[in-house]
Image (cartoon, rainbow, N blue to C red; front, side, top):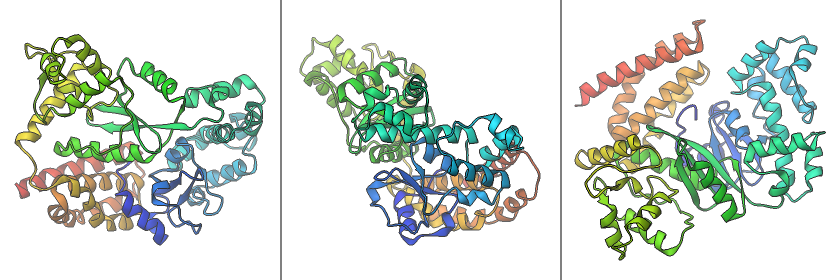
Length: 448
């Protein structure tokens, strides 16, 4: 995400209220229809459990949603730059056309200018957007049970091999393998120690692993085989839930994970995973001790194998196992991460924050007025400020967070000045970050 979104319940209320102040900044993807809308869309509102919220149209389309034809969410950006409006009209008129740079040149447009304009306003290039829309049409057709050749034609592909390659690249399976299957959804979650991949169905989380894990491709292959499902990028409720819980874990040592899990393993392996979840925060356990807890003291090697078979990092804390001599042993995410996680848990065990972190996320509601103040101005300054406000809410709770927010009003004038500077976006972002970091230091000195 480009910035941390408010709590989904706050955004859902804004959706029910048709709050226009979020237009261009927050979008809702409706899982039951496959479309994404403005929060102010006049159409009938979806159920909360069918609503996924995004901070950019690019992330909506990458998750497989297509623009609503009623509220036309991309129209918000049409007035920002004429070239964007012109090409969006062309794409609507010819959604199945294989757009290329020659088409852009034939319209007397400069490809590099078009590329920069779309990246700036939509978050992806025009050609990438056209490709995603074609793939999405084919994917929907296959999932609905239509033949592969019908889906190929629906997506505008003349070549069967080209269509197979495009769909396989997008979701990891060929079109024939996809037909009639329920799709699992996968998305990246950012953490202080690297990106994690989360995979879920509508009700359960199936996998949570660090991206660099060597066995990740094999784990995904086994997951597809076991569930007889295919995997596409997108969001489902369990992914949203574990993202929220991971933020609590990394900011407060929270371990009360409630995300429903789908566990595929023999009884013995499940017993090892149960024993892992009983290891208290900030403590470790040797493989030999873990074997004793499972009632199989002679099965140390089997316990180690079950430990390594864990596909739900952090939730099932296999990082809390160590060698009999106290040394750190193998960890799929890397020993440096294992060391970091253990130190992180010990730090929060001995130095907990004074306020309950499970309520801290709601502090963002107190700062929602900032979005209304900054909405017409520079988007990068808005994102950096919003991200900081949400972090302050998590760290200090609503009471102290409001004190800090009041001081942030002093940044208002300065952030408005950004809009008048003809600076490169990276320079603006860096300047905003420096200002915010300086303010953090000042606030910490005042509070503590």
